[in-house]
Image (cartoon, rainbow, N blue to C red; front, side):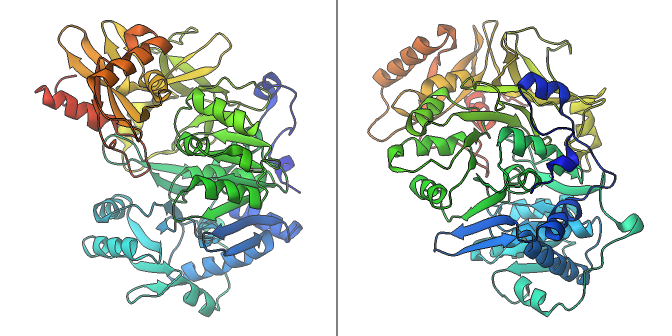
Length: 562
């Protein structure tokens, strides 16, 4: 059983054109995922599998919807006893612990605003979040390092009333398990104006952007419905199947692949609570639990293809997807060769759901984001706001006058920033791309990352894709460097694979390699070898830091001159 019939006009489609023209989502009044999906399954099929959880130590648990309803009701009653109510901000730092799922559902039932966060945060990051969002309660996994950082942050900030620890006890903290077991109050389902749903705020996410302080993105209770497209028509989740998205609960990708759309489509989710990503272990987990649909970022696929893929059983896997950063075609072909499975790329943002994707009726073009989702009005526009012709680079925008399900409500406490990117019913993503003659979108780079050299506009991704194909290159970042004649030139910052050392000969070899793959004018005139690239806590390369350092070495302050 699944709940798709309840929310979509039609489930099956014959082609992308049929899908784009006829698909629609029925949005009920005051929709609340916790009540309308989790509790609905618990009522109609309580034994339906919802989640399979396992860790590195052989522990495993299977949760059914009947059990999740009981646990989430009990958790909600406990949070109510702490004084948590509709609109209160609750930060969750829970990694991949199974408690996250019934705690977030409990918050949805109360109407408290969930703020999932990564365990990689440090004191200053936590202080910023507490003060910027007005966090009232922190629920944290019992791990010494992050607990210590939270305690330091709470001492130096104001507003946090409750510290709740999961999987342990410590002085100054309330034990979630202990308090839950002692809670004898029944959950009081909110009514009237206190009932959460529809356009009320449900989630607040801090972006992991590569520039400036994280922005606070707000999503409402209708947001999960937009992920029907994500789960059913991109991940291709199967009713009573098992979907596996690799993501920590601190990242928005877990909302894309470990909860909302998958459950509406009737698929259970696999949660592998790993201490460290090891490609062989992940592939063995997929094999052991008979995963049917799978999604991971390109970085992880790069590690997968270094394994002997013939040693694994992929017979249960029906569909693979890839997202998080642009896909290098070489990764696509090596995975296909080793598994027989195509990778279907998709594109979205923290502010959106899946906006562009390679859908099942399409033949993927490796490296292309695909075609527009039918729930969004996607376009490419030039600097004057005019639609681009095929082959012309422009910024990806969404026209939101009529289609805005799943689009964020704005940046919390920053109306000016919201209006700067979303005005006149057009949301500007800040991402540059072009369309080919078939309408497929191809990612070029962030608008701020595009390099302007001698009148040419050069996107970093194409050059990075060319460089990464060379066996000497482990990782690379393409940025602009100042040049008196050309204005800017292409610079490559490269991390080498084992067995290679920097040399002028290798510089020449890499430059010729790029020229042989892409337009010669795009080759990196400057190549710098480094031990590692600067990255955000979510693993995204911070090209802005590399670019800023490059310009400062030339005595140019980017705050005043590009």
